[in-house]
Length: 242
Image (cartoon, rainbow, N blue to C red):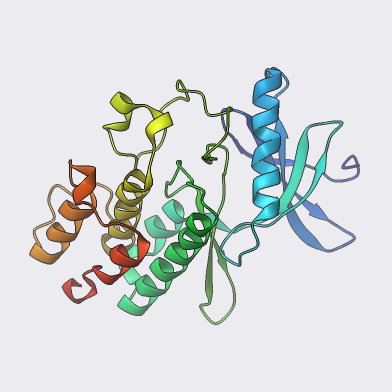
C-alpha cells in the first residue's frame, strides 16, 4: 500500500481528499484521491464512476488515472504542476499570443474528445484544467475532475446535484442539472477561452468589440443562439483582438 509514502494534502472536494506523494520506486510524484469516510453508497458509486470514466478516456488532454483501490475507495492519478487558475495568475503578464493559442487549442481538443464520447463534463472551471510544465517552455494542458460528468442514460444524475462552477450558466440554477446540454458546456468554455485570452474572469470592463461579440454569442441568454459546438466556437475566437 501507500504506508511507505508520506502523503501531502493538496485539497479536498465534496467527495474526496486529494494528496500527493513521491514514489521512490518510480522516482515520480503521483496524486492520490481518497473518498471521504462519510459518503453514502450512492456517493461512493459516483466517486468510483469518476475513476472508471477517466480510465476509459484515452487522450493526451485528459489526466491519466492508474488504479482503483476498492478496500480504501481511493485511486492514483498523474501529478500535474498547477491549475489553469494559478498558471494564469502567475504568468498572464508575460504570455504571448502563440502561447495563449496553444493553451486554448489543447483545452478545446480535450473537450472535443469528451464530446465525441457523448459526454459532458458539467464542471468546467479553471481549477479543473491542469497544467504540466516541461523544459523549453513546453506546456501541456489536461482536463480533470470528472465527478459531475453527464451520462445520457445515467440514473446517478440527481436533479439536486449542487450547482458548482464559476463558469456555469446561471440559468442552470433554474432549469436544473438534468437539462444540462451542449449549450451549457459552450457557455463555460467561452468563459475559459476569455480567461486565457485576457487573464480576467470578470469581463464587464472589456471594451474590445471583437472580444465582446465573442463573449455575447458564447454566453447568449438564449442557449439556441450560442455556438453550436466546439468547432464553431474555435472558428470564432478573436485572436486578432490581442
